[in-house]
Length: 173
Length: 329
Image 1 (cartoon, helix red, strand yellow):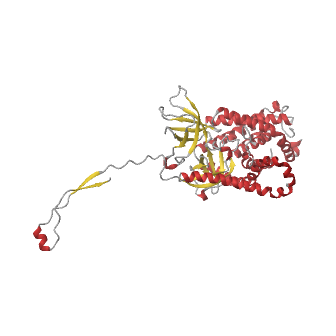
Image 2 (image 1 turned 60 degrees about the horizontal axis):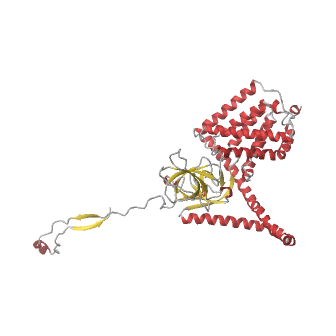
Image 3 (image 1 turned 90 degrees about the vertical axis):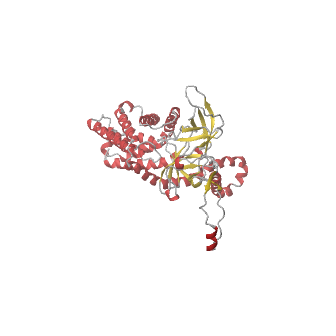
């Protein structure tokens, strides 16, 4: 990932974070809320090579850590998403065929988001955070998975298009 | 889909980068847990950036949200509405805005009524944002801050009872930790039996109530009231919290526990009030006992002789007698 694209991605993520905190969070969906930010970030990570995925995971996590409503220590999301970014990029060959289609890609992002949320909760528990009822946490994760799969056809195509516009000719080849 | 993706596995460089980033993240976590202001300050800056956007979004979306409920009522008189469509289209936005304002006023009136009944001094505020789904925290953002004399650890109430506590505050906004957050704990007492216990948020609309006293009593339907904190921070006493919906009689635990439902619907908050000053006569303070009368004996100095008094023209002093006077300590 070249520095210019990294800077643009960071700005894009921060803008998306503001939309998530100001607009998406206000929408009261049944079951649980939907994290558009997490879904888009994981989609972006899935499309990057290993170094790019790790860096994007770290930066995306830091932006998410800025959330003023968070009770977790600053850096927790950065840690989790860096690991998730690495795991996705390390197993790219295994998941590449799976994420070729939009529906498969949506399901993959949903699973990745659920895994990231579960890891976040688990790490938070290790740090002594109160995460409430176990089944309630399961419902939140499942609800987020469901909405990620449902809404992914709406944000994946424009995201792909945006990414294509930003690729250099060398990366495109 | 995967155009431009390098499928070659990364080498040592990417692993080194991974380790560096993980160590950096752990460094940030350690700093935050040790209370370094750099990391907490970054969240305050973010809140300052988010506040104007949240206020704008709140202003736009509040009437729209109520508009959808009005649509349902329009369906009942569809034929009439067809005739009046042109006229209604012109007035629709005004109606929606009026209903929105009326709804907010009703909510505000209820909140202020509760505050007035208990002699709370409050600052009313509108809810402008909610906690993100990715943080698992139950919070709201309100449009009142230090400029409105709101400070951290102040109780937030609605027309029906407790809402939460102020978690962080900026100049014109504040973040309120809702009472259903898993990290939220409050001391409460059962209104009927005066038994004291701890209420814990569960992340949803139910709460866990644990009695502190093994001999305490709690029944289904019992009302719970906040017990109050030292210097009324973070919780003021006497705020209605919720009611018991189920009691757990498990013999394996020493004290009783119960499931509680809150009086306040936290999913539908529009206007809240921050209690900036609690009542001077708090309900949790016991009534002062009546003072016991005590007897004090005053001894008057020895009198002058009558002759001396007559020579000097002074009025003769009365005969000394011990006097008993009631006084209080």
